[in-house]
Every structure is written in structure tokens, then in C-alpha cells.
Length: 224
Ligand SMILES: *[C@@H]1O[C@H](CO)[C@@H](O)[C@H](O)[C@H]1NC(C)=O
Ligand SMILES: *[C@@H]1O[C@H](CO)[C@@H](O)[C@H](O)[C@H]1NC(C)=O
Ligand SMILES: *[C@@H]1O[C@H](CO)[C@@H](O)[C@H](O)[C@H]1NC(C)=O
Image 1: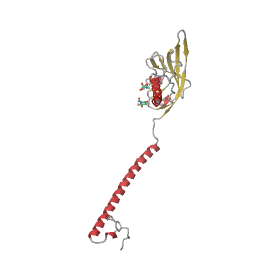
Image 2: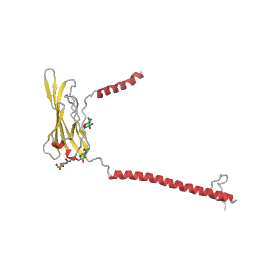
Image 3: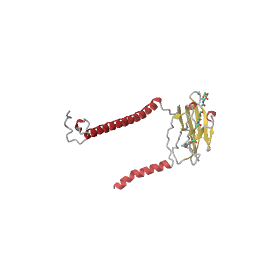
Image 4: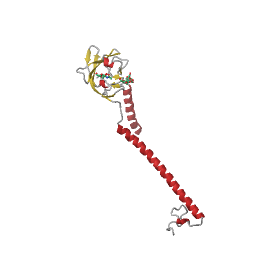
């Protein structure tokens, strides 16, 4: 039946929505290009392979600036508390990861005000303890993000100029059109007045090349 067939995609869509809403874990890669003076989310998601297994996790971030020789501890999040370790980032990092749980799968952090000095390599280390009924098992998934900082989206001079030119030409064209219309209108009305005057004087209005009068004989050339 067509009705049932139409229902299938709907049900699939709903199932997908439930999956997303229930927080099914998807490992989305982090962005790698931050804009200076804006905020930026360093994404780091590590899904448990088996969602039903109990676990606890902590996250440690490391940072190596582009002119640093080694990477150093940047931020740790454990037992629902985050701590900025790198003085260069004091007051500038917020936790953007899993909330209200120790079973972290999202270890993202947020840089409040990116500077060019934040360019470099970030590493996010999960330390996850999987808790089975009679054993524990530790895993250490990690992700590396190479961050590039770009200036605030400044539109090039060329782009601004071309937009200005666009407006200038649009306005210019309309003004030209207006002037042309006024000119034509005046010319037509002047010609019309002249024709009226001439016919009032008893002359043949057909002599006027610019005829506004009924055109019973206007196809004949004006006789002089
Ligand atoms: C970000 O930092 C820059 C320079 O350090 C400063 O001028 C700017 O006001 C800061 N912006 C915010 C939103 O804190
Ligand atoms: C991440 O944290 C920042 C700063 O606290 C906040 O403005 C932003 O909405 C958070 N984003 C997400 C996706 O949680
Ligand atoms: C970036 O680093 C340089 C040199 O390390 C320092 O002089 C400058 O103040 C730093 N800029 C910011 C915005 O932190």
C-alpha cells in the first residue's frame, strides 16, 4: 500500500532523530581554523566502543605552540572539574565537553578569545576506565588538532570596492533612466503643445513630424 510505503522514510527519520536526541555518540572532527579575537571550540569526541559498558574518564589537553619545542599540559578535566594548567590560557578556557557525568565522551574545550599565539598543535588525551562486572580495562584514545589562527574575516578591499561599484552603478542607472524619462516626457509634451498650437492657427498639423493626433493619414509624408 502506498500509505505504508510513505511511512517508511518518516519512521526512519524519526528513528534518526531519536538517535541524535538521545545523544548517540558521533566522533566529529574538530575545526582547525580559528579567527583571532573570537571564541573557538577545540572539539574532541571519543565514543565508547560499547555504549552499555560503564566507564569513567578524564581528559587532559596538551599544547605545543608553533615556536615551542615540546608540548606541555594545557587543561585537565577530571571528576567534573576543569583546570587550566598553562598560564597563557588562564581565564580563557571553558569546558565544552560532557556535562554532569564522569563517563566523558566529549572532551571539547572552548578558547574564549583566540590570539595568534594560540597557533600550534593541540592534543586531547582521554583516560578511560571501562568497568566490567569483574574486571577493569583502561584505554587511552587521543586526538591531535593542528590549529591555525586567521585574522578576523576582513573582506578584501577589492570585494568592498566591487560592492560599492555595484550600488553606484545601480543608482547611476536609475538616475539616468529618470533623467531620460523626464527628458522624453518634456519633449513629447512640447511637441504635443506645438501641434495643438499649430492646429489652432489653422495650419495643417500633419506638417509636424511629431504627430500625436489620430493617425488617419500620418503614413503619408509631410508635404511642404
Ligand atoms: C580579546 O583579546 C584582545 C587582545 O588581547 C582584546 O583587545 C579584546 O578586547 C579581547 N576580546 C574579548 C571579547 O575579550
Ligand atoms: C562552549 O563554552 C562557551 C563558553 O562557556 C559557550 O559560550 C558555548 O556556548 C559552549 N558551546 C557548547 C556547544 O557547549
Ligand atoms: C604572543 O607572544 C609574544 C611573544 O611570546 C608576546 O610578546 C605577546 O604578548 C603575545 N601576545 C598575546 C596576545 O598573548
